[in-house]
Length: 531
Ligand SMILES: *[C@@H]1O[C@H](CO)[C@@H](O)[C@H](O)[C@H]1NC(C)=O
Ligand SMILES: *[C@@H]1O[C@H](CO)[C@@H](O)[C@H](O)[C@H]1NC(C)=O
Ligand SMILES: *[C@@H]1O[C@H](CO)[C@@H](O)[C@H](O)[C@H]1NC(C)=O
Ligand SMILES: *[C@@H]1O[C@H](CO)[C@@H](O)[C@H](O)[C@H]1NC(C)=O
Image (cartoon, rainbow, N blue to C red; front, side, top):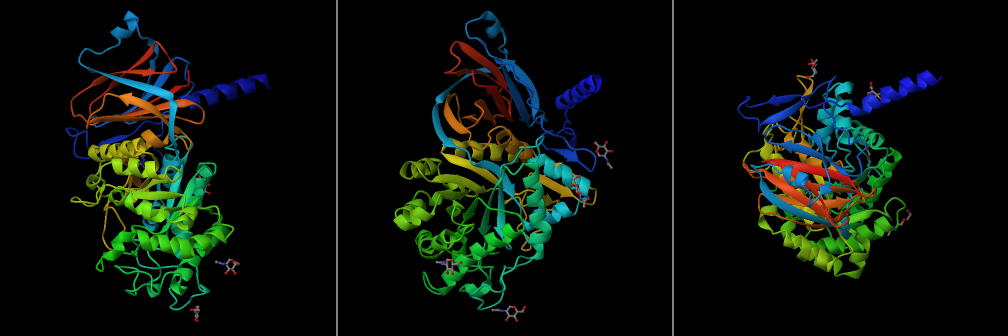
């Protein structure tokens, strides 16, 4: 008995220490390592190098870079700030930088990081054999993967569907007697959501968003194109549309899927454009406030599945803040039904990050959550396989959001095909995982690693902590304390040639310093335990 125990133990120990590294493919040839994907198939996929057990004076450093590193792990040691040995650790060619972390200064807590279960993501997953699907799901949700903690689910169809459909396309069915989920829910959404749930041990928050009401409820008669709900505020169309949300929660619940949150409408302002290219429905801040207060809030409040749901307003671009939030929250009733503000990244270049901080200052009890982002939506549409710059764009936006009180960040489709679809109106984009079903392979884009630098260690309920650091438009960072009092410090360096030698100090480790070399065009996550 004893011997068997020992063998089992040593086997487990060796399993815990080994991991599968990235199988690199330079998609534009070896001279361009900044276009590199990691290749996975039915029998092989890279995973996240385990943290292992850290000594009290050591920190783990994970680096991904345009030069080809992907979650490369090393350890560094906290040393006496005054000792000569410490100074020897500094690299001669590196530029000295300072950072100071104050764990006692605590700011917003984290809801999570994740991506969206669209029809297209499910169609692409279903195009792989089961073993390959399993490795893809583990890569995002498993204990050796990114450990995503958040998932978004479109209610019925959106552009990342193969056609236009709602859950009740029966004109005049105000009682929603014919409300029903579709083949897409049963084949492409629910099975993958449930596998993700199982891999996370149930530790994943889901939120849903509608793109449009059924065409018959809209002024333009179609889900596609601009238009708003027919009728008047609080009227029969409003009430029916509100009840549709409740029915959606009920049907998913019957299938074993429960939601933490809802957004009232995806990108409501796009519904002002009568020629808008896919499903949308118009609200401005005033009409969304009225819909929430007259219809959606009361309907959710009256339902056992809806009454504790985190309802989010806006679900649209940053530049609409703080005005949108002011309109909704200035109304006591709409305020009482609404937990947070949902934000998309697409026009962040139009609006300074101070718009977020100002919104938080006015409404400190409402969370802000980034609910959609993707690359390849502008100028170059679709995947740009292996492009490091897209990982850098993600890291930049996530750090800016987190430093301005945003509580989490949700990527768009978890997986797309080689063209960045399917998308029934050809609005193709990029995704962190691109699937080539003809080869039975999938490719982890640099964006996948960008997400992991945040999602892996900044667990739900982590709290942002005080950080002052040397920074500029190329260099920035954000620091957290996790529920187990781990410290997590993420640094983005977008400079193409500068290496920085960071001397990191922490208020709870007086007299100590951590020297970390930050390489050009990189994302670095540093993890250590509370002193
Ligand atoms: C899967 O990937 C591994 C690692 O790159 C490789 O050794 C193996 O041959 C691949 N399998 C197939 C069927 O291509
Ligand atoms: C797919 O793989 C998973 C995990 O290995 C397993 O639980 C499941 O039963 C498999 N499904 C099919 C249809 O083979
Ligand atoms: C529900 O669907 C059936 C056909 O499946 C149709 O005959 C009936 O009229 C529909 N009910 C409503 C209220 O639209
Ligand atoms: C509340 O729920 C009950 C039972 O489900 C329903 O009859 C009633 O119409 C609902 N009221 C509102 C305001 O949705």
